[in-house]
Length: 350
Image 1: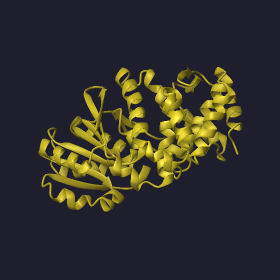
Image 2: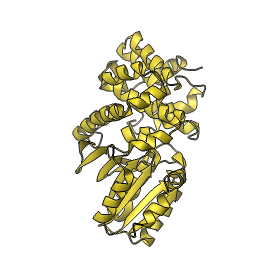
Image 3: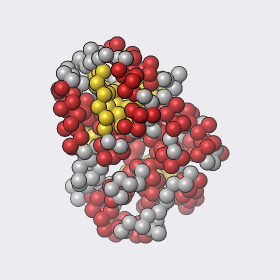
Image 4: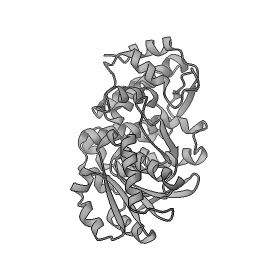
């Protein structure tokens, strides 16, 4: 078992290679009441109802699948459930699921009684390396993704690698997009590992190392800049464009698939504005395509631009992006014009 410390509004640890059953048992012994949220497929595939029934102080709330759970109507139902369960400030919430579930669970915990303890048990690669770590919580609005939220760190993140065995190749590859992002902004060894393990099956063999390396980078960045005053924005490399096309697809595109296209867009933008070398831009395409991740889009540019204007990193009318000077050297791009964005888009449009 490995542990990675994260310093935020409080210090907590990411525990890698645990068994979730033991974790739930420990949490139930540490709090009078525990409110567990999980999507139906986790409840069914891991016999969660039967297991929690043996822990007489837990309440299970089943949430919808995917991004559809990050809706104001769902959070309202969760608040009602927490009230009916009598959850107090000495109690806790546990979110078991992918990144959408940990985003939702963290936000529910942040807003109930102005903040109760919560724990993340991520079940997808994307959630393990990104969503569950860092204390960003939130839900979506009709304007855009993750625009309603708060910073509220978990008391612990517990990663059970057994969950990865049940992921489809598509879902595992989507998680690799977030790993690849980390490789480009900070840890180039990740890129070397992924190039030498050049398909999903082989990447599974080194998943623990990839997860560990990705979390170490995120923990370091978050510990220096918890509330994203500047440094933490580097973790959003590829996300401004990615979030826009994810929203346009009505979340039919996986988050990681949208980020994959966003990474290529950000690389092309970096080539135009920062002189990023062409071979590094092409490396983005080749390593993503290696894992059958998309690198282009057919979506029209005008609505993408409007969605990017509502991105959290925008300041007034100014559009801001994270770019790269070179591998491991991210750079902030301020006041990027719509003309530059459109000509960059043309390089990734099908």
